[in-house]
Length: 363
Image (cartoon, rainbow, N blue to C red; front, side, top):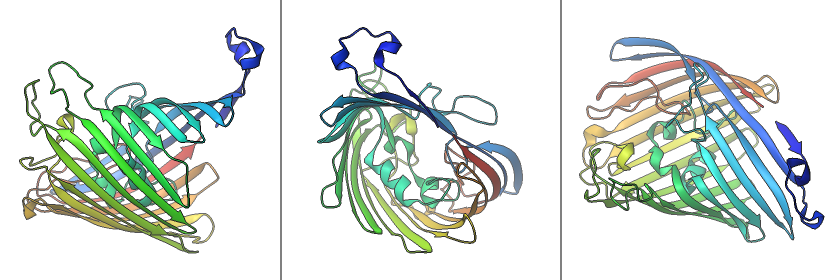
C-alpha cells in the first residue's frame, strides 16, 4: 500500500489554519491471474482468467480527521481484467465501490455505490485465506449480484455494542431513469452481526423491487423480492467451519435470474465450508459444499463441490490450486464462478468440472 500525508494547504486549498487537520489517502490493489481447465458437455476449455480467487482491482481510501472523534471518509474502487487490461463489470470507472461519508461515535454513514449487508455476510462466511467468496466457494456460484451491490444508496454501520453490530442500507435502484419503472431496483436491507471470542453469526434481510422480464418500460409492473440470509462460523486452532443459508421469496413468474431487471426466482441455497489452516508453513485448504434449490421446479436444482489449496509465499503474494465441480439438473445452468464474475458458460442441464492454478499479489 502507498500512503500520502499532506496538509490541505499543500493541495492548494485556502482556509484558516485552525481548520487544517490530518488527512491521508491510501492506494491499494489486488492482482489475481490464473490458468483454468474445464470440461462441460464434452467440451474442454483452457484459458487464462483474471479475478478467480480475488477480484482484480485497485482503489483509493481517504480519511480526514474532523476532530471530536469524527472523520470524513471515502472509497473508490475499480475492478479490471488482468489478462487483457479492460475494465470489468458494467464498464464504469469505479464499478465496485464509490462512496463518501462521515465516521464518528454514532458509527459510519456513506452515500454512493455500496455493498449490501448481504454481501458483507457472504464475504465473511464463504471462506478462504487469500480471499473470501471466490473460485470454488459454493455461495459464490449461487449469489445473485444485484442483491450484493447497489448504486444510488445510503449505507449505515453502527458501533459495536455488547458484541452486536447493525448494518442498514437503502438504495434508489434505477434512480428515476427514464424508460424504467420508477421503483425498479429500489432496495432496503438490514443486518445484525454478533461476535464473541471465536464465534460469529449474522442474520440479514433484504427486499428489492424487480420486473419479471428483461425488457421493461416505464409502465412495466414491479414486485418485491425478499431475501433472508443466516450464517455462522467458529474459529478453532486448526480449522474454521462456516455455514450460510439464503432464502429468497416472492420471485413467482421468474424462471431465471435477470440482472438488468433485478429478477431472481424463488430459491434456497446453502454453503457448508471449512478453512483448514496451520498446515505446514503459511498453507491452508478450503473445502466447500453447497446446494441450490429452485422452489418452482426441482429440475432447477444444483450441487457444488470445491477444494482449494492456498500457499502464502510472502505477506503480499500467494499461490493457489483448486478443483471444483457443479452438477446441474435439467433446468439449471450454474457454473464455477470467478470472484470477479461469471465463469465458463454452461448450458442448462450440463455439469462442469474444473481445475485452476493461479497467483494473487496485494499492494
